Length: 111
Image 1 (cartoon, one colour):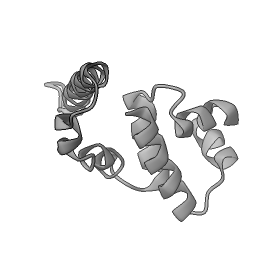
Image 2: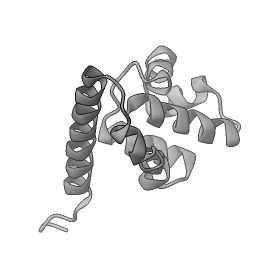
Image 3: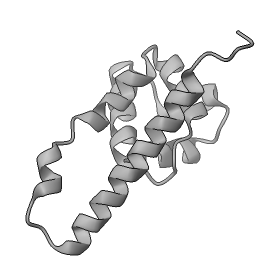
Image 4: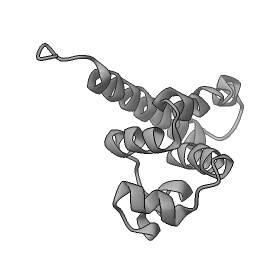
């Protein structure tokens, strides 16, 4: 999941003609940490995802839409049992990540 998000972020960043250094500076993190986000080596938090979307002048859903593009047919393929179990866990992780993101984006009673 993080690899897909990182790839989408990289594509948008390149389209905006920004460097990793510029992104890292705006996020107030090191370039190495930002590079790990784009490479999928670091988990991306909702906070960072929101800040990245703001810097790139896109919505969070513009970035996360790449997660919906994965064909659901791949989960029904006749691959080995281990990969099927792994894919189920990936689907559960995605579900809970989306649920968490949805809950964070809902207006609170204070607003």
